[in-house]
Amino acid sequence: MTLKKTAARAVATSMLGLAGLGIGAGLAQADPHTPMPPPPPVPGMTGPGVNAGTPGNPLPPGHGYLPPPGHGGPMPQDRIPFTATPSWVLAPVVPPMGTPPAPPLPDWATGMQVVWNPDLGAWGVWDMQGSAFIRI
Image (tube, rainbow, N blue to C red):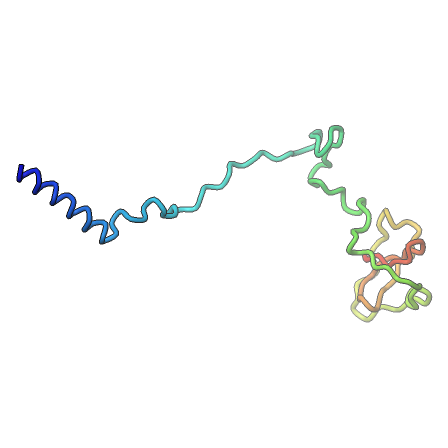
């Protein structure tokens, strides 16, 4: 009986000692040593003939969700509205030396006037109906 008591006392003492040293404490709360693996790749839509967004709306080849260059119209951040027609539209300003020549008129800007905006230092078109300068 004394052998069993001694063995039990030794086990209890060693457990208290190990708990006091912190061995085994906090293992359940530890973060993983490595980051989680990335999610598996999802195959993307490719090539002509796939339905992007809605059925019957195929992607143009090589452009993702964007239309071919020059066919999408101006971006909202390129449109700069004015309350009155600026003087550089009424009397066109000569761009400074070293400025690249005026770019060709995009498809969406047919009939608009190409002007140099000296305030922005950029070529663009003047939209008479919207009273806005659109950078090109």
